[in-house]
Length: 319
Image (cartoon, rainbow, N blue to C red; front, top):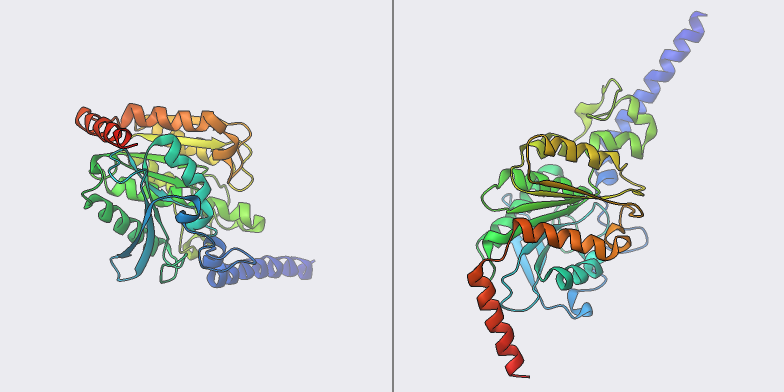
């Protein structure tokens, strides 16, 4: 009997040790995937392929890492909202260009697409601390531009990008006017058991009931659930109910936490939306919900609207 008990505890100990080894050695490779299987780190296309007018922007993060971004404008003097877009964990910003093309057309906005460190043409290696610094560098750059309305900067984040955007929004109440989250997780701690089911007994956040013995090993916890309740700006939650990566109840928990402290929140569900295609499967309803949110919380001021109408009229007169 004693031998069986000993074997059991040795087995449990072996699993724990294996989990610790996996976390220490490979966790960044699980959380951050700059290169999709079979592809290269470089951009497969640029905005020019989709006939989008853009600038290559090079930034320095606070720790000196060189970053690349695309700033895409609807037209040269566009004073509409500027959306600071943060992507998911896999691939690079080029893989989101078709969605951004439609975003610009539907919302009449500018879009700033940042490549996290280690992604696309940016230098360095991804980490939570580093990417948090990268996002701040992007926002600081936008805040200093003279060709946009800096009072209408909106952060948009999907999945990992939502975690990045939530931290940035909380830290910059005077620079970020609103936040849009799509299919974002409560924390990487909660996602550990989703990605590697055996880890749910050892790692967890607010959604987990396990002992959480290995939480201290997680270097990129991205605990959005702990951040969202501190955000004072308007927040729009876009949730695809068929999300195959992040369980939809994560978004429901984030919304509940935010709504308890912020009366400028809105939650929209898309019954057929999956993790990456909610914007596509949501169709016109998806874009109308975002437009209504922007019209309500980031309205165009009269002076800007008058200037835009004069610009449009001038362009028409030359045709």
